[in-house]
Amino acid sequence: MTQTNRPAFGTLLFFAIAFALSLYFTFAAVQGDFGLFRRAEVVAESQDLRMLLADVRADVARMENLTKRMSDDYLDLDLLDEQARKVLGMIRSDEIVIR
Image 1 (cartoon, rainbow, N blue to C red):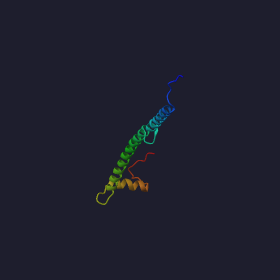
Image 2 (cartoon, helix red, strand yellow):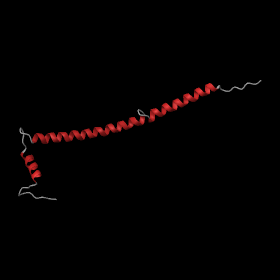
Image 3 (cartoon, one colour):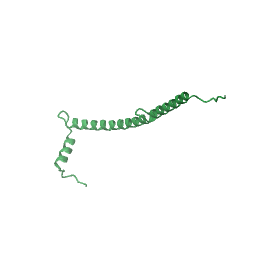
Image 4 (tube, helix red, strand yellow):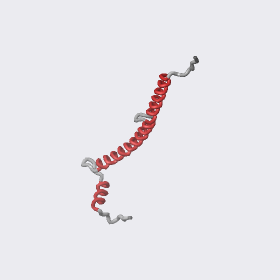
């Protein structure tokens, strides 16, 4: 009787399952909801939102400045004149309109 040395079926099954699990977890670490690609997307989106926040803050500062200049405590007559002429659609006699 001769015996051949071949691996047991259980050992082969164990390594196949371990290999499949390692492939799954590697794929999840790269492509999953919390993977490397998603992290890169979140970082890029974060940078876009930071730039948008800076733009919004600049707009708010500009509007606060205009509001302060039109308030009762501090009245900018040039700004008031500009806004009134813009709303009423009128010009002064010494101005030239270019379209």
